[in-house]
Length: 534
Picture 1 (tube, one colour):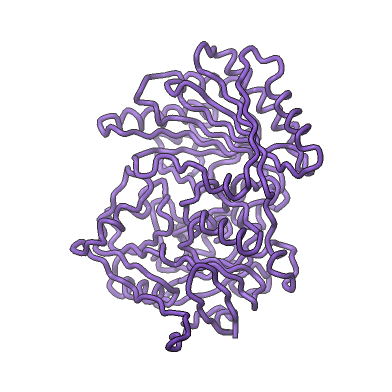
Picture 2 (cartoon, rainbow, N blue to C red; picture 1 turned 180 degrees about the vertical axis):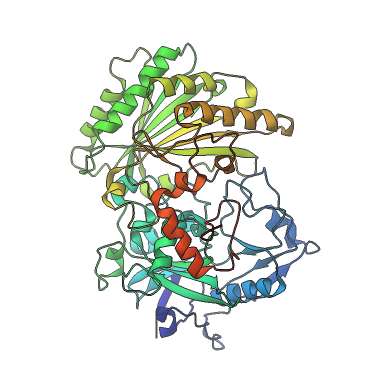
Protein backbone atom coordinates (compact mmCIF):
# COMPACT_ATOMS: atom_id res chain seq x y z
CA UNK A 1 0.00 0.00 0.00
CA UNK A 2 1.35 3.43 -0.96
CA UNK A 3 1.50 5.72 2.06
CA UNK A 4 1.05 9.45 1.52
CA UNK A 5 1.52 11.90 4.35
CA UNK A 6 -0.24 15.17 3.52
CA UNK A 7 0.14 18.46 5.31
CA UNK A 8 -2.76 20.88 5.23
CA UNK A 9 -5.27 18.49 3.69
CA UNK A 10 -6.93 15.11 3.90
CA UNK A 11 -4.84 11.95 3.80
CA UNK A 12 -5.57 10.08 0.58
CA UNK A 13 -4.72 6.40 0.28
CA UNK A 14 -3.47 5.08 -3.05
CA UNK A 15 -2.38 1.70 -4.30
CA UNK A 16 0.13 -0.06 -6.47
CA UNK A 17 -2.10 0.81 -9.42
CA UNK A 18 -0.97 4.43 -9.14
CA UNK A 19 2.65 3.40 -9.56
CA UNK A 20 1.62 1.29 -12.54
CA UNK A 21 0.15 4.35 -14.19
CA UNK A 22 -3.58 3.85 -13.54
CA UNK A 23 -5.53 5.80 -10.96
CA UNK A 24 -7.09 3.92 -8.07
CA UNK A 25 -9.67 5.95 -6.11
CA UNK A 26 -9.24 6.50 -2.42
CA UNK A 27 -11.35 4.42 -0.09
CA UNK A 28 -13.95 6.19 2.02
CA UNK A 29 -12.71 7.08 5.47
CA UNK A 30 -13.85 4.93 8.38
CA UNK A 31 -16.22 6.63 10.87
CA UNK A 32 -14.25 8.39 13.57
CA UNK A 33 -10.93 8.04 11.74
CA UNK A 34 -10.38 11.78 11.67
CA UNK A 35 -9.46 11.55 8.02
CA UNK A 36 -12.63 13.07 6.61
CA UNK A 37 -13.98 12.68 3.10
CA UNK A 38 -13.59 14.83 0.03
CA UNK A 39 -16.58 16.76 -1.33
CA UNK A 40 -18.16 15.50 -4.50
CA UNK A 41 -17.53 17.31 -7.77
CA UNK A 42 -19.74 20.39 -8.04
CA UNK A 43 -21.36 21.46 -11.30
CA UNK A 44 -21.79 25.24 -11.19
CA UNK A 45 -24.02 26.79 -13.88
CA UNK A 46 -24.65 30.56 -14.26
CA UNK A 47 -27.67 30.34 -11.95
CA UNK A 48 -25.47 29.18 -9.06
CA UNK A 49 -24.20 31.98 -6.77
CA UNK A 50 -20.71 30.40 -6.92
CA UNK A 51 -20.51 31.01 -10.66
CA UNK A 52 -19.45 34.67 -10.34
CA UNK A 53 -16.65 33.69 -7.97
CA UNK A 54 -15.31 31.07 -10.37
CA UNK A 55 -15.76 33.23 -13.46
CA UNK A 56 -13.76 36.02 -11.83
CA UNK A 57 -10.70 33.93 -10.98
CA UNK A 58 -8.78 34.82 -14.15
CA UNK A 59 -5.73 37.00 -13.43
CA UNK A 60 -5.91 38.91 -16.72
CA UNK A 61 -8.90 41.24 -16.73
CA UNK A 62 -8.78 41.46 -20.55
CA UNK A 63 -10.75 38.24 -20.71
CA UNK A 64 -13.99 37.08 -19.08
CA UNK A 65 -15.26 33.62 -19.94
CA UNK A 66 -18.90 32.57 -19.70
CA UNK A 67 -18.87 28.77 -19.91
CA UNK A 68 -22.01 26.68 -19.64
CA UNK A 69 -20.70 25.46 -16.31
CA UNK A 70 -17.72 25.06 -14.05
CA UNK A 71 -16.81 21.70 -12.57
CA UNK A 72 -15.12 22.08 -9.19
CA UNK A 73 -13.20 18.86 -8.54
CA UNK A 74 -11.28 17.44 -5.59
CA UNK A 75 -9.64 14.27 -6.89
CA UNK A 76 -8.24 12.67 -10.01
CA UNK A 77 -11.24 10.34 -10.13
CA UNK A 78 -13.54 13.35 -10.32
CA UNK A 79 -11.43 14.88 -13.10
CA UNK A 80 -11.65 11.65 -15.11
CA UNK A 81 -15.43 11.64 -14.71
CA UNK A 82 -15.77 15.33 -15.66
CA UNK A 83 -13.62 14.91 -18.76
CA UNK A 84 -15.52 11.78 -19.79
CA UNK A 85 -18.86 13.57 -19.47
CA UNK A 86 -17.59 16.49 -21.56
CA UNK A 87 -16.26 14.18 -24.27
CA UNK A 88 -19.50 12.18 -24.34
CA UNK A 89 -21.51 15.40 -24.72
CA UNK A 90 -19.17 16.84 -27.35
CA UNK A 91 -18.38 19.84 -25.13
CA UNK A 92 -15.23 21.96 -25.38
CA UNK A 93 -13.42 21.51 -22.06
CA UNK A 94 -10.40 23.24 -20.51
CA UNK A 95 -8.76 23.28 -17.08
CA UNK A 96 -8.00 26.10 -14.66
CA UNK A 97 -5.40 25.85 -11.91
CA UNK A 98 -4.17 29.22 -10.59
CA UNK A 99 -5.89 31.26 -13.30
CA UNK A 100 -2.82 33.23 -14.40
CA UNK A 101 -2.92 32.54 -18.14
CA UNK A 102 -1.82 35.64 -20.07
CA UNK A 103 -4.10 34.90 -23.04
CA UNK A 104 -7.71 33.70 -23.43
CA UNK A 105 -6.92 29.98 -23.46
CA UNK A 106 -9.38 29.41 -20.59
CA UNK A 107 -11.61 32.48 -20.62
CA UNK A 108 -12.62 31.96 -24.22
CA UNK A 109 -16.10 32.20 -25.81
CA UNK A 110 -15.72 28.73 -27.37
CA UNK A 111 -15.11 27.02 -24.02
CA UNK A 112 -18.21 25.29 -22.65
CA UNK A 113 -16.87 23.58 -19.51
CA UNK A 114 -14.06 24.76 -17.25
CA UNK A 115 -12.73 22.14 -14.85
CA UNK A 116 -11.48 24.07 -11.83
CA UNK A 117 -8.83 22.12 -9.90
CA UNK A 118 -8.00 24.86 -7.39
CA UNK A 119 -9.32 22.69 -4.54
CA UNK A 120 -6.83 19.94 -5.43
CA UNK A 121 -4.08 21.34 -3.22
CA UNK A 122 -2.74 18.57 -1.04
CA UNK A 123 1.02 18.31 -0.48
CA UNK A 124 2.82 15.39 1.08
CA UNK A 125 5.59 12.84 0.89
CA UNK A 126 4.95 9.63 -1.03
CA UNK A 127 6.89 6.88 0.72
CA UNK A 128 6.65 4.51 -2.22
CA UNK A 129 8.03 6.91 -4.81
CA UNK A 130 10.32 8.62 -2.27
CA UNK A 131 9.19 11.93 -3.72
CA UNK A 132 7.03 14.85 -2.71
CA UNK A 133 3.52 14.71 -4.12
CA UNK A 134 1.91 18.03 -5.02
CA UNK A 135 -1.58 18.31 -6.48
CA UNK A 136 -1.81 20.55 -9.52
CA UNK A 137 -4.26 23.06 -8.03
CA UNK A 138 -1.79 24.06 -5.33
CA UNK A 139 -0.39 27.60 -5.51
CA UNK A 140 3.33 28.33 -5.41
CA UNK A 141 2.93 30.12 -2.09
CA UNK A 142 1.33 27.04 -0.54
CA UNK A 143 4.07 24.82 -1.94
CA UNK A 144 6.91 26.98 -0.64
CA UNK A 145 5.38 27.30 2.81
CA UNK A 146 4.47 23.63 3.28
CA UNK A 147 7.68 22.16 1.86
CA UNK A 148 9.83 24.55 3.87
CA UNK A 149 8.05 24.44 7.22
CA UNK A 150 7.37 20.71 6.93
CA UNK A 151 10.72 19.46 5.63
CA UNK A 152 13.05 22.44 5.14
CA UNK A 153 13.13 22.05 1.33
CA UNK A 154 11.80 23.86 -1.74
CA UNK A 155 11.65 23.96 -5.53
CA UNK A 156 13.07 26.82 -7.66
CA UNK A 157 9.72 28.17 -8.87
CA UNK A 158 8.39 31.62 -9.67
CA UNK A 159 7.98 34.70 -7.51
CA UNK A 160 4.19 35.15 -7.59
CA UNK A 161 2.68 33.16 -4.68
CA UNK A 162 -0.79 32.91 -6.25
CA UNK A 163 0.32 31.15 -9.45
CA UNK A 164 -0.93 27.56 -9.71
CA UNK A 165 1.42 24.61 -10.04
CA UNK A 166 -0.53 23.06 -12.92
CA UNK A 167 0.48 25.62 -15.53
CA UNK A 168 3.72 26.87 -13.97
CA UNK A 169 5.40 23.49 -13.63
CA UNK A 170 4.40 22.18 -17.06
CA UNK A 171 5.92 25.23 -18.77
CA UNK A 172 9.28 24.69 -17.05
CA UNK A 173 9.02 26.95 -14.01
CA UNK A 174 11.80 29.35 -13.07
CA UNK A 175 12.39 31.85 -10.29
CA UNK A 176 14.83 33.46 -7.92
CA UNK A 177 16.70 30.23 -7.09
CA UNK A 178 16.93 28.87 -10.62
CA UNK A 179 20.48 29.98 -11.35
CA UNK A 180 21.54 27.83 -8.37
CA UNK A 181 19.00 25.01 -8.62
CA UNK A 182 17.77 24.88 -12.22
CA UNK A 183 14.14 24.83 -13.34
CA UNK A 184 11.26 23.20 -11.47
CA UNK A 185 11.16 20.48 -14.14
CA UNK A 186 14.74 19.54 -13.23
CA UNK A 187 13.19 18.26 -9.99
CA UNK A 188 10.17 16.58 -11.59
CA UNK A 189 10.11 12.84 -10.91
CA UNK A 190 6.65 12.01 -12.28
CA UNK A 191 3.33 13.51 -13.29
CA UNK A 192 -0.24 12.23 -13.24
CA UNK A 193 -2.36 13.22 -16.23
CA UNK A 194 -5.96 12.66 -17.31
CA UNK A 195 -5.91 11.87 -21.03
CA UNK A 196 -8.44 10.81 -23.68
CA UNK A 197 -7.64 8.00 -26.10
CA UNK A 198 -8.70 7.56 -29.72
CA UNK A 199 -11.88 5.77 -28.64
CA UNK A 200 -12.89 8.75 -26.49
CA UNK A 201 -12.15 7.04 -23.17
CA UNK A 202 -10.88 9.27 -20.36
CA UNK A 203 -8.36 7.76 -17.96
CA UNK A 204 -5.41 8.80 -15.85
CA UNK A 205 -1.82 7.76 -16.34
CA UNK A 206 1.40 8.40 -14.44
CA UNK A 207 4.45 9.31 -16.54
CA UNK A 208 7.92 9.42 -15.01
CA UNK A 209 11.41 10.58 -15.87
CA UNK A 210 12.65 6.96 -16.05
CA UNK A 211 13.73 6.35 -19.68
CA UNK A 212 12.30 2.83 -19.49
CA UNK A 213 8.84 4.06 -18.49
CA UNK A 214 6.40 3.35 -21.37
CA UNK A 215 4.85 6.75 -20.61
CA UNK A 216 8.18 8.59 -20.53
CA UNK A 217 7.38 10.60 -23.67
CA UNK A 218 4.44 12.21 -21.87
CA UNK A 219 6.68 13.17 -18.93
CA UNK A 220 9.15 14.69 -21.40
CA UNK A 221 6.42 16.74 -23.08
CA UNK A 222 4.98 18.00 -19.80
CA UNK A 223 8.46 19.00 -18.60
CA UNK A 224 8.39 22.31 -20.46
CA UNK A 225 5.75 21.79 -23.16
CA UNK A 226 3.14 23.90 -21.37
CA UNK A 227 -0.34 23.27 -20.06
CA UNK A 228 -3.51 22.47 -21.95
CA UNK A 229 -1.81 20.43 -24.67
CA UNK A 230 -2.04 16.73 -23.84
CA UNK A 231 -4.43 16.30 -20.93
CA UNK A 232 -5.21 17.62 -17.47
CA UNK A 233 -2.37 17.30 -14.99
CA UNK A 234 -3.68 16.38 -11.56
CA UNK A 235 -0.48 15.95 -9.55
CA UNK A 236 3.29 16.04 -9.62
CA UNK A 237 5.96 14.04 -7.82
CA UNK A 238 9.09 16.04 -7.05
CA UNK A 239 12.57 14.63 -6.47
CA UNK A 240 15.75 16.26 -7.68
CA UNK A 241 17.50 14.56 -10.57
CA UNK A 242 20.34 12.38 -9.33
CA UNK A 243 18.96 11.98 -5.80
CA UNK A 244 18.73 8.33 -4.84
CA UNK A 245 15.23 6.92 -4.39
CA UNK A 246 16.18 5.85 -0.86
CA UNK A 247 17.09 9.33 0.32
CA UNK A 248 15.21 10.70 3.36
CA UNK A 249 12.46 13.25 2.72
CA UNK A 250 14.53 16.23 3.81
CA UNK A 251 17.19 15.40 1.19
CA UNK A 252 14.93 14.65 -1.76
CA UNK A 253 14.65 18.34 -2.74
CA UNK A 254 17.15 21.18 -2.22
CA UNK A 255 17.22 23.40 0.81
CA UNK A 256 16.75 27.14 0.22
CA UNK A 257 18.94 29.68 2.01
CA UNK A 258 17.73 30.44 5.51
CA UNK A 259 17.88 34.16 4.78
CA UNK A 260 18.14 36.42 1.75
CA UNK A 261 20.51 39.36 1.52
CA UNK A 262 19.00 41.86 -0.89
CA UNK A 263 20.35 45.11 -2.27
CA UNK A 264 17.95 47.45 -4.08
CA UNK A 265 19.57 49.97 -6.42
CA UNK A 266 17.12 52.70 -7.40
CA UNK A 267 17.54 55.38 -10.06
CA UNK A 268 15.32 58.42 -10.49
CA UNK A 269 13.93 59.17 -13.94
CA UNK A 270 14.30 62.87 -13.20
CA UNK A 271 17.06 64.24 -15.42
CA UNK A 272 17.78 60.71 -16.72
CA UNK A 273 19.20 61.14 -20.21
CA UNK A 274 19.25 58.51 -22.94
CA UNK A 275 23.05 58.35 -22.56
CA UNK A 276 22.90 57.77 -18.80
CA UNK A 277 20.18 55.15 -19.22
CA UNK A 278 22.26 53.30 -21.84
CA UNK A 279 25.27 53.41 -19.52
CA UNK A 280 23.32 51.81 -16.64
CA UNK A 281 21.74 49.05 -18.72
CA UNK A 282 24.96 48.25 -20.58
CA UNK A 283 26.86 48.02 -17.29
CA UNK A 284 24.31 45.54 -15.96
CA UNK A 285 24.58 43.42 -19.11
CA UNK A 286 28.37 43.25 -18.95
CA UNK A 287 28.24 42.34 -15.25
CA UNK A 288 25.77 39.52 -15.96
CA UNK A 289 27.97 38.09 -18.72
CA UNK A 290 31.04 38.20 -16.46
CA UNK A 291 29.19 36.19 -13.80
CA UNK A 292 27.34 33.78 -16.04
CA UNK A 293 29.60 30.83 -15.18
CA UNK A 294 30.09 31.57 -11.47
CA UNK A 295 28.77 28.55 -9.54
CA UNK A 296 29.98 29.18 -5.97
CA UNK A 297 27.01 31.33 -4.94
CA UNK A 298 28.97 34.59 -4.90
CA UNK A 299 27.33 36.11 -8.00
CA UNK A 300 24.01 37.66 -6.92
CA UNK A 301 20.79 36.85 -8.71
CA UNK A 302 19.40 39.97 -10.38
CA UNK A 303 16.04 41.47 -11.40
CA UNK A 304 15.97 44.69 -13.36
CA UNK A 305 12.58 46.45 -13.23
CA UNK A 306 12.35 49.28 -15.74
CA UNK A 307 9.14 51.10 -14.88
CA UNK A 308 7.88 53.76 -17.28
CA UNK A 309 9.19 57.28 -16.71
CA UNK A 310 5.83 58.39 -15.30
CA UNK A 311 6.46 56.17 -12.24
CA UNK A 312 9.44 58.31 -11.31
CA UNK A 313 12.06 55.57 -10.87
CA UNK A 314 13.41 52.19 -11.89
CA UNK A 315 15.43 49.68 -9.94
CA UNK A 316 17.73 46.68 -9.87
CA UNK A 317 17.44 44.05 -7.11
CA UNK A 318 20.34 41.79 -6.20
CA UNK A 319 19.88 38.71 -4.00
CA UNK A 320 22.54 36.60 -2.30
CA UNK A 321 22.63 33.92 0.38
CA UNK A 322 24.24 35.67 3.38
CA UNK A 323 25.63 32.35 4.62
CA UNK A 324 27.90 32.02 1.56
CA UNK A 325 31.51 32.64 2.54
CA UNK A 326 32.35 36.29 1.95
CA UNK A 327 28.75 37.21 1.09
CA UNK A 328 29.05 40.84 2.22
CA UNK A 329 32.21 41.36 0.18
CA UNK A 330 30.63 39.65 -2.81
CA UNK A 331 27.63 41.97 -2.63
CA UNK A 332 29.92 44.99 -2.27
CA UNK A 333 31.86 43.90 -5.37
CA UNK A 334 28.66 43.46 -7.34
CA UNK A 335 27.34 46.89 -6.37
CA UNK A 336 30.67 48.49 -7.24
CA UNK A 337 30.82 46.75 -10.62
CA UNK A 338 27.31 47.94 -11.40
CA UNK A 339 27.55 51.54 -10.18
CA UNK A 340 31.13 52.86 -9.87
CA UNK A 341 31.73 55.75 -12.24
CA UNK A 342 28.15 56.01 -13.52
CA UNK A 343 27.11 59.52 -14.49
CA UNK A 344 23.85 59.02 -12.53
CA UNK A 345 24.28 57.30 -9.17
CA UNK A 346 21.51 55.22 -7.61
CA UNK A 347 20.36 55.06 -4.03
CA UNK A 348 21.15 51.72 -2.38
CA UNK A 349 19.41 49.83 0.40
CA UNK A 350 20.59 46.50 1.80
CA UNK A 351 18.37 44.20 3.86
CA UNK A 352 18.51 40.66 5.21
CA UNK A 353 15.19 38.82 5.45
CA UNK A 354 14.19 35.24 6.35
CA UNK A 355 13.85 33.30 3.08
CA UNK A 356 10.20 32.29 3.44
CA UNK A 357 9.11 35.78 4.40
CA UNK A 358 10.98 37.27 1.46
CA UNK A 359 9.47 34.69 -0.88
CA UNK A 360 5.85 35.06 0.21
CA UNK A 361 5.73 38.85 0.43
CA UNK A 362 6.24 39.46 -3.30
CA UNK A 363 3.62 41.80 -4.75
CA UNK A 364 1.45 39.93 -7.26
CA UNK A 365 1.02 43.05 -9.43
CA UNK A 366 -2.08 43.85 -11.45
CA UNK A 367 -4.33 40.92 -10.57
CA UNK A 368 -7.76 41.37 -12.11
CA UNK A 369 -6.78 44.33 -14.28
CA UNK A 370 -6.43 43.98 -18.05
CA UNK A 371 -2.86 43.67 -19.26
CA UNK A 372 -0.74 42.51 -22.18
CA UNK A 373 2.65 40.82 -21.72
CA UNK A 374 5.18 39.90 -24.37
CA UNK A 375 8.22 37.82 -23.48
CA UNK A 376 11.61 36.86 -24.89
CA UNK A 377 14.70 34.90 -23.91
CA UNK A 378 18.01 36.71 -24.47
CA UNK A 379 21.28 34.90 -25.07
CA UNK A 380 23.18 38.20 -25.03
CA UNK A 381 22.49 41.50 -23.26
CA UNK A 382 20.59 44.22 -25.10
CA UNK A 383 22.90 46.23 -27.36
CA UNK A 384 22.87 50.01 -27.79
CA UNK A 385 20.13 49.89 -30.42
CA UNK A 386 17.86 47.79 -28.19
CA UNK A 387 18.50 50.05 -25.21
CA UNK A 388 17.71 53.13 -27.27
CA UNK A 389 14.34 51.67 -28.28
CA UNK A 390 13.56 50.73 -24.67
CA UNK A 391 14.45 54.21 -23.40
CA UNK A 392 12.33 55.82 -26.09
CA UNK A 393 9.21 53.78 -25.32
CA UNK A 394 9.58 54.09 -21.56
CA UNK A 395 9.77 57.86 -21.99
CA UNK A 396 6.75 58.11 -24.30
CA UNK A 397 3.31 59.24 -23.12
CA UNK A 398 2.08 60.07 -19.65
CA UNK A 399 -0.16 58.84 -16.85
CA UNK A 400 -1.74 56.11 -18.99
CA UNK A 401 1.59 54.27 -18.59
CA UNK A 402 1.60 53.82 -14.80
CA UNK A 403 1.20 50.11 -15.50
CA UNK A 404 3.90 49.87 -18.20
CA UNK A 405 7.31 48.32 -17.64
CA UNK A 406 10.06 46.01 -18.82
CA UNK A 407 11.27 43.23 -16.52
CA UNK A 408 14.64 41.56 -17.02
CA UNK A 409 15.28 38.46 -14.90
CA UNK A 410 18.62 36.72 -14.67
CA UNK A 411 18.65 33.23 -16.17
CA UNK A 412 21.55 30.85 -16.85
CA UNK A 413 23.62 29.14 -14.18
CA UNK A 414 22.41 25.61 -13.39
CA UNK A 415 19.60 25.95 -15.95
CA UNK A 416 22.23 25.53 -18.65
CA UNK A 417 23.52 22.26 -17.17
CA UNK A 418 20.66 20.29 -18.77
CA UNK A 419 20.49 19.49 -22.47
CA UNK A 420 17.85 21.46 -24.44
CA UNK A 421 16.45 18.14 -25.64
CA UNK A 422 16.38 16.34 -22.27
CA UNK A 423 13.02 17.99 -21.58
CA UNK A 424 10.64 19.91 -23.83
CA UNK A 425 12.07 23.21 -22.53
CA UNK A 426 14.66 24.29 -25.14
CA UNK A 427 15.97 27.64 -23.87
CA UNK A 428 18.76 26.36 -21.66
CA UNK A 429 21.38 28.74 -23.05
CA UNK A 430 19.44 31.93 -22.28
CA UNK A 431 21.11 34.58 -20.14
CA UNK A 432 17.97 36.62 -19.40
CA UNK A 433 14.20 36.39 -19.51
CA UNK A 434 12.66 39.68 -20.66
CA UNK A 435 9.00 40.74 -20.34
CA UNK A 436 7.48 43.83 -21.95
CA UNK A 437 4.16 44.68 -20.35
CA UNK A 438 1.41 47.22 -20.05
CA UNK A 439 -1.72 47.30 -17.90
CA UNK A 440 -4.57 49.75 -17.82
CA UNK A 441 -7.42 50.82 -15.57
CA UNK A 442 -9.48 52.88 -18.01
CA UNK A 443 -10.97 50.68 -20.73
CA UNK A 444 -11.03 53.63 -23.12
CA UNK A 445 -7.21 53.40 -23.30
CA UNK A 446 -7.14 49.66 -24.04
CA UNK A 447 -6.53 49.89 -27.78
CA UNK A 448 -3.82 52.54 -27.45
CA UNK A 449 -2.05 50.57 -24.71
CA UNK A 450 -2.17 47.37 -26.75
CA UNK A 451 -0.83 49.21 -29.78
CA UNK A 452 1.95 50.73 -27.69
CA UNK A 453 3.28 47.45 -26.27
CA UNK A 454 2.98 45.72 -29.66
CA UNK A 455 4.98 48.46 -31.38
CA UNK A 456 7.48 48.43 -28.53
CA UNK A 457 8.17 44.70 -28.83
CA UNK A 458 8.25 44.84 -32.63
CA UNK A 459 10.79 47.66 -32.61
CA UNK A 460 13.08 45.99 -30.05
CA UNK A 461 13.27 42.95 -32.34
CA UNK A 462 13.03 44.85 -35.63
CA UNK A 463 16.16 43.18 -37.02
CA UNK A 464 14.51 39.74 -36.79
CA UNK A 465 11.01 40.46 -38.04
CA UNK A 466 9.59 41.89 -34.83
CA UNK A 467 10.07 38.73 -32.75
CA UNK A 468 12.99 37.10 -30.85
CA UNK A 469 13.98 34.55 -33.50
CA UNK A 470 16.31 31.86 -32.10
CA UNK A 471 19.90 32.75 -32.93
CA UNK A 472 23.03 34.23 -31.40
CA UNK A 473 21.23 37.08 -29.61
CA UNK A 474 17.85 35.60 -28.66
CA UNK A 475 16.49 32.13 -27.97
CA UNK A 476 12.78 32.60 -28.61
CA UNK A 477 9.92 32.91 -26.14
CA UNK A 478 8.55 31.23 -22.99
CA UNK A 479 5.35 29.23 -23.34
CA UNK A 480 4.26 30.29 -19.84
CA UNK A 481 4.16 33.83 -21.24
CA UNK A 482 1.96 33.08 -24.26
CA UNK A 483 1.50 35.86 -26.78
CA UNK A 484 -1.01 35.29 -29.58
CA UNK A 485 0.57 38.14 -31.55
CA UNK A 486 3.38 35.75 -32.49
CA UNK A 487 0.85 33.94 -34.70
CA UNK A 488 -0.16 37.17 -36.46
CA UNK A 489 1.85 38.10 -39.59
CA UNK A 490 1.10 41.74 -38.82
CA UNK A 491 3.43 41.52 -35.81
CA UNK A 492 5.59 38.53 -36.75
CA UNK A 493 7.13 39.21 -40.14
CA UNK A 494 10.10 36.90 -39.57
CA UNK A 495 8.70 33.91 -41.43
CA UNK A 496 9.50 31.84 -38.32
CA UNK A 497 6.36 30.13 -36.96
CA UNK A 498 5.18 30.75 -33.42
CA UNK A 499 5.87 27.17 -32.34
CA UNK A 500 9.55 27.47 -33.31
CA UNK A 501 9.83 30.56 -31.11
CA UNK A 502 8.46 28.64 -28.13
CA UNK A 503 9.75 25.10 -28.68
CA UNK A 504 12.55 25.38 -31.24
CA UNK A 505 13.62 21.96 -32.52
CA UNK A 506 11.54 20.12 -29.91
CA UNK A 507 8.24 20.86 -31.62
CA UNK A 508 8.08 17.81 -33.95
CA UNK A 509 8.58 15.51 -30.97
CA UNK A 510 5.83 17.35 -29.09
CA UNK A 511 3.54 16.73 -32.05
CA UNK A 512 4.27 13.00 -31.89
CA UNK A 513 3.42 13.00 -28.17
CA UNK A 514 0.22 14.85 -28.99
CA UNK A 515 -0.74 12.22 -31.56
CA UNK A 516 -0.22 9.43 -29.04
CA UNK A 517 -1.84 10.95 -25.97
CA UNK A 518 -4.49 13.32 -27.35
CA UNK A 519 -5.34 11.96 -30.81
CA UNK A 520 -8.80 13.57 -30.75
CA UNK A 521 -7.36 17.02 -29.91
CA UNK A 522 -9.62 17.30 -26.87
CA UNK A 523 -7.14 19.51 -25.03
CA UNK A 524 -6.50 22.55 -27.17
CA UNK A 525 -6.32 26.33 -27.25
CA UNK A 526 -5.11 28.99 -29.66
CA UNK A 527 -1.43 28.09 -29.20
CA UNK A 528 -1.65 24.43 -28.25
CA UNK A 529 0.60 21.82 -29.84
CA UNK A 530 -0.97 20.77 -33.12
CA UNK A 531 -1.47 17.21 -34.28
CA UNK A 532 1.01 16.18 -37.01
CA UNK A 533 -0.10 17.56 -40.34
CA UNK A 534 -2.45 20.12 -38.79
